[in-house]
Structures are given as structure tokens and as C-alpha cells.
Amino acid sequence: MTEAVAETVPANISDADWAAAARTIRELAAEGRVLLICHVNPDGDALGSMLGFALGLRRLGVRRMQATFPGPFEIPEPFTALPGLDLLVPEEEAYADPDLVLVFDVASESRLGALVDRVGTAGATVVLDHHASNTGFGGVNLVDATAAATSVVAEELLRRLDVPLDVEIAECLYVALATDTGSFRFDMTTPRVHEMAARLIATGLRPGEISRRIFDSRPFGAMKLFADVLGRAQLDPTAAAGHGMVWTYATLEDLDRHGQRPYVLDALIDPVRAVAEVDVAVVVKQTGDAEWAVSMRSKGAVDVSAVAVALGGGGHRLAAGFTGYGTPGDVVFSVRQQLAAHLIA
Image (cartoon, rainbow, N blue to C red; front, side, top):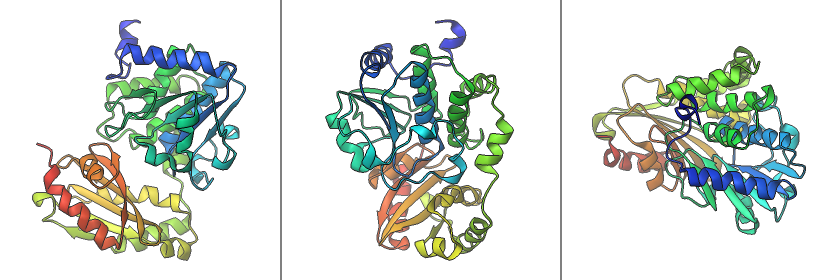
């Protein structure tokens, strides 16, 4: 490995684990049934890493392959133009007993929903992830908490499998990288990230077009929905030992009233986290009767991953989430109780 390449290899993954993952894929993927899985309600990194890797396997000649995710079979609108969507199947059509399972951007088995049994029935399981809270549930675990996105791990494994980048693989990995770095604005945007982006762009993809599709295109109804939800935001300056918290919530009725799908709420955390007076931003999104998906962001004073783990979820130091129950007030109260205990020294 050259010095230039070595600087871009994800840290915290041993050479033995890289070799085991590559060997497992080479031994089982050529003739076996391969099932790629990402997490429920997939985001750009989950879908992009999974589909980019699947396209790489296709270049290797893998013939029997499916990609899937648990829950409703709905692709968020910003990702409906991703290459490789033809490989996706609903969870009920996924191989029941695959020879090889590859899991992307999943920190724990609970995020696999009804597909969790495939981990037990598969001949082998390889996990590619970048969450510090990863539980190590795979047979081979390629987990690097210092990586900005799971696509960083996926690209390196493709390199070790001697799969060259093409424009379709690169577009998937670029979408993954761009979404998890907030269009290259977040703290995890390191020189390594820009070096990877340069390799991907060099294949001929058009980053401006991708950014407009992913970040700068939103239905009018979503804008109206955001106005309602942001209008009920509350500021709590004494939370997190005085570092402060801002929070809001969105209901299923909000979505119905504006004719929007749940995925549009994924972008809601961005204007909330921009509030200057606080460190922590929380968005509580209804998913069922008294059930809420909670997104948290920190500007650096609080480890929201530790907060999320304490409440049954996971994530990264500055971006994490969990599932809460009760009223929005109940959920935010549980968050508030944890904040002061997880300050970053």
C-alpha cells in the first residue's frame, strides 16, 4: 500500500478484519445468494453505501444478489435517482436463508427490524458501519467510528476487492458521503473526506446536480409543514448545565395536513440546530400511537450519542437518535434528564 493510500484508509479496523471481510465475500459471493441490508427508514449514507457496494459486487460478477431494508418499501424522494435501485426488493421478498449478508450503516440488530433473522440464518455476516455505538453483532465487523460515513468503509473494502470505481458506484458513495457530512459542513469533514470526494468526482459525476437533488429540492407542502413545526419550537436555555437546548415536534397529523411523506422531516433538524443560543437541538417525529423518532444534534458541549444509548438508541458524538414513547413533552423530558450527565469535557 502506498503512503498516499494509507493516509485515506479508515482507522480502527485491523488488517485481519479487512482480510477476513474480503476473503468471506470472495468465497461466498461468487456462487451464493448475497443479501445486502441497511437500516429502517434509510438515509443517504445507508442507501448510498449499500447500493454503491452492490454495484461493485455486480462488477465482480456476482449474479444472485438483493438489496433491502426493513419496514415500508419507500425510497425517499431525494434518493429515487440513485444508480442500483433495480437491486432493491421489499423485505418480504428478500432471501430467507442467504449465504452471505452484508449490513450497512447499522449500529445494532434492533435497527434491522423483521430482517434481523437473516443474520442468524446466513452462512456469514459482514457489517460495515461508522457508529461508535455499534454492538459488534456481525461475524466480521468493519466499524470505524472516526469515519465520516459508512461509505468511507465501503469504498476501502471495494478497493481491497480490486473493484475500480465507475461513475455509478461513485455517485452512490458520494451521496452517502455528502449527506452524512451535511454537504461537507460537519466536524467529521476531514482531509480524508475531501480526498475521497475528489476520487469520486474524478469518475465524471456532477456534484452540483447531485447537491441540488439531495439538499436543495423540497415540495412546497414540506416548506409549509416546516413553518408549522418550527413555529412551535421551544427554547430551554438552562438545559445541559446551561449550554441550552431547543426542541420541537412533528405529528402524523402535520404530515397528513400538508400531504407529505415522513422522509421530508429528516431535513428538519438542520434549521433547528442553527439556533445560536443553544448547544443541543432535538426534533421529535411521530411514527405511531405515542411513538416518536428522536433526532439530536450537539455543537460540541454534549455527547448526544451517550444520551441516545442511555435511552435505547445510538449514533455519533454530535448526531444521534432513539425511539421515544409517550407525549413529545415526555420524550424531551427524558432527554433533558440525560444531558448534564454527558457533557464533553
